[in-house]
Image (cartoon, rainbow, N blue to C red; front, side):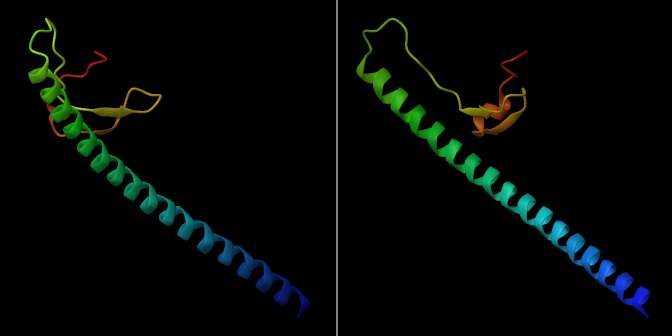
Length: 97
């Protein structure tokens, strides 16, 4: 009888641990996906505002010989893989190539 209760306790502990690990894993994945989507939206808004600011400053400073034109904004991590970008950046060639 004692062996049955020990096995039951161990199996309950393992079962609860496995359920906890799996739920935590899926919660982290969902949160990461939400943060990535939020970053993408913010990068798009920032890129559009920088593009508008650039176009406004270039119309004011027509006397300058070189003007800055932003075609998009991208965010990368330490590896050369794209994390988030504005829509127009996706159509451009890879700047690291």
